[in-house]
Amino acid sequence: MKKQFVAALSRSQGRNAWAVIFRHPIRIDPNTGKVGLRVRQGLGTADEVEANQLKDQLNQLLGDDSYWSLSAKSDAERRFHRRVVEIFFHGMEPEENDFGAIRESIITLPTSQNSEYRRALLLGTTGAGKTTLLRQLIGTDPETERFP
Image (cartoon, rainbow, N blue to C red):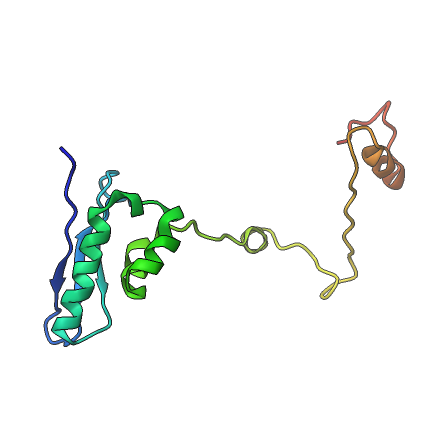
């Protein structure tokens, strides 16, 4: 039997705006390692009628597993309210990582802006002579020294 995923309305104490709470059919709960991450997101409205309409749209999306992949996001955007799509697809998109910034935070390399060092990139197919050129530039002998 297929598991049912249903959204419910919620309102925090002392707040006027509505939120939805549901178990996500695709996202994994990091605490349990199982599918069904508990999601609570604000709908951005204090109007109960509008909040119910958005909740109903989210339940339609949750009830149709053809929307449960990132490739279906454009179809969902045409059929459902923008906020409903944002809530459902949040966290499904892969994170963009700036690997240069990560490396720079661990190993700071000199740049041409803050030093007299320069970088050079040697490109070429296998056997083109990149390592031979570098050995010549730094003056190593391939017969007696291991480099690289």
